[in-house]
Figure 1 (cartoon, rainbow, N blue to C red):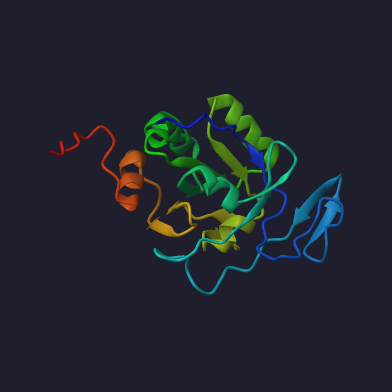
Figure 2 (cartoon, one colour; figure 1 turned 120 degrees about the vertical axis):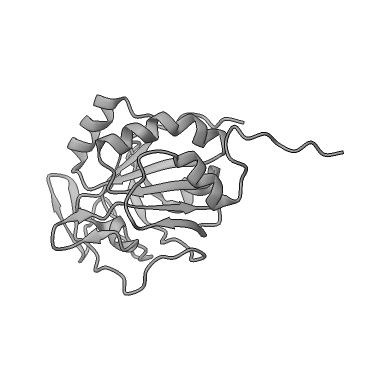
Length: 201
C-alpha cells in the first residue's frame, strides 16, 4: 500500500530533546530571537554514537505548517530513512527512489546543512516530494554524531529508524549513489522491493 506523498521543506527552528524546549515566543538560554525566528545554537556532539538498537534522539523542528513536530511524529506513519548531508545528486536519487521507499512503508527524510531559504529553493528546483529539514546550525545532526563543529557541515550519514524510534540501520561511510529502497528493506528485514514472494500453502 502506498503512503500519501509528503510535503517537502520543513524548516528547523530548534531541535532539542529538552522537555523545557524553547517556544516560538521565548528563545530561552540556548538561542536568540532575530527577525521573528529563533536562532538556536548547535548542541555539543554527544559522547556516544547513535548505533543500531539505540532509541533515536527525539529531535524537534518547526514544519511548513508553522507548528512544532518531533521525530515521533515523523515515525507515526511508518519507519523513516533519515539522511544527513545529502548533496544535490543524492537528493535527486532519493526522489527517484521515493515511490519504492513508500511501497515499503518507509518515509525518506533528508536533513541538510543549508539555511532554510536555500533549502526551499533546492526543493523547488528539483521538485522534491519528500521531507527536507534545514539544519544549518547542526542541531539535529549533532544529536546523531553527524555534525562537524569545525566546518559547520554535516557528515554524510544515514539511519533507518522504525516506528518505535529504534535505530535499525546505520551508515557512516557516506551516502550511496543508489539502492536506498534495498538499503531500507535490509535494515528492516523486509523483502527487497520487486522481489518475488514465496507462495504459502
